[in-house]
Image (tube, rainbow, N blue to C red):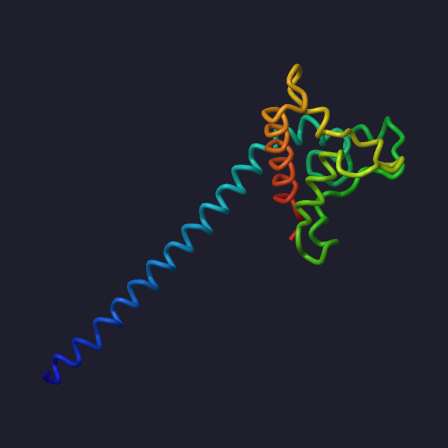
Length: 154
């Protein structure tokens, strides 16, 4: 083998590794973009349900200042949903929010009775608690939670 052959033989694995690393990096970036877009889409689809079911108490901006708080005595008052991540060490408590919106996971306190059990309320009429209805309810509640995640204060 000549010196040139040795250089070519050494360069080929290096080029292959570089190409593989670039492909892997591109794949990871693609996954991150798709995940971010999916979360954004879920948040967008959750806006309508949030406005229809949550804003009356929590307010359009999620500050706990909805119009019902002026006419319905609520003790405790509706939570400021925009500070949930901050109050949880900077991490949005997604699963806890989903469970809270759903309302069926734990035995509620008296305070919880002020907030509807959306996991029950959102069931499809005539198909309540079927796999199809439960899947739709889960999707809607996840979307509402993604919307609440999107309004967190930075």
